Image 1: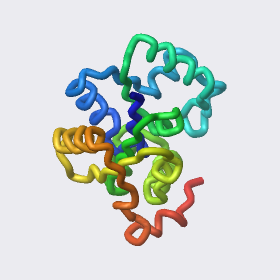
Image 2: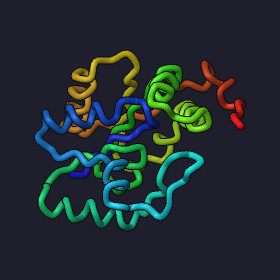
Image 3: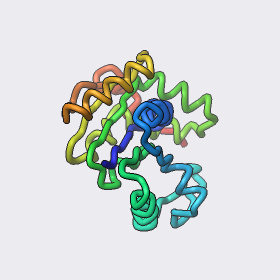
Length: 177
């Protein structure tokens, strides 16, 4: 089974993926790291300080791992685009996302783009197939992981539980130059 843990940067994907992987004994593939380490990109976007992923190379890389691993967890904000069997979309209050990304040293333009993506449900809207959405705001990692395990075990699907637009509409009209 290919499980995608997706969401905008700063929602808790890596933390949740690590604990989930340990608890289930499943290999976790950090998409950001493998793209960088194995040069699975076409170019680096200097303006956004990110890599433009070569999805064909990335898919081949994952397929090679799956020859040895029965199940994998794909950790990354594009993991929902990698043909998962089950997608977990993590969501978090945009103010918390903003704080986390600023602490990581993201440029203001990148912070704004990601906060806007969280407000607009971008990862959720792009996710297809079996999808389960979780609001991670002010929640314990163990609690989130236990909910994910139950969702997968019972093949639960859930979308549309979070709506940040009314509270954060002003962020959608901001521009950083």
